[in-house]
Length: 180
Image (cartoon, rainbow, N blue to C red; front, top):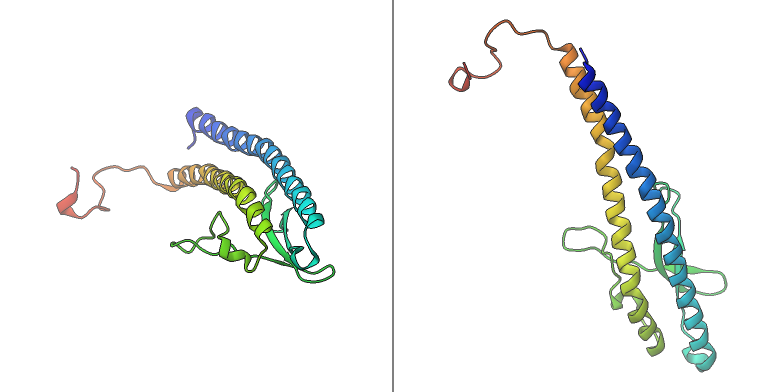
């Protein structure tokens, strides 16, 4: 049987979940703008370098901000790619950390053969991209950690409702660990 405390707590948990979602959405919007600014800055710097380089050193690395179809609302990815001909690109892999999770930062080896000016640009822009990826990861963790709170509390209430009132010592615990 739910009392006023249960109703109040359910309301507070629901409000917490809503507040987290709303604040994360605002933060993600600003982070996306920053990522797009970073992409634009990189692209402009890359184009400047390409214009001054001989054709054999034009470079083929690009940076893209995109939304995956499977992403949670507001989430996005910051990825490097290699141009492989007209209108063909190949996204580069970041690799995994020692725990098997995707790394936040690309290693320089992930880019393969690159020009010296591309390497300089990558060294300038990738640390910023990695920090944004880390922030995205933590926001995703925060969102995922608040969603189960309401469900868990509702399940606790359901257990209370199905439990019968106890009239004496319970036989759930073995006699050696019984509390009575």
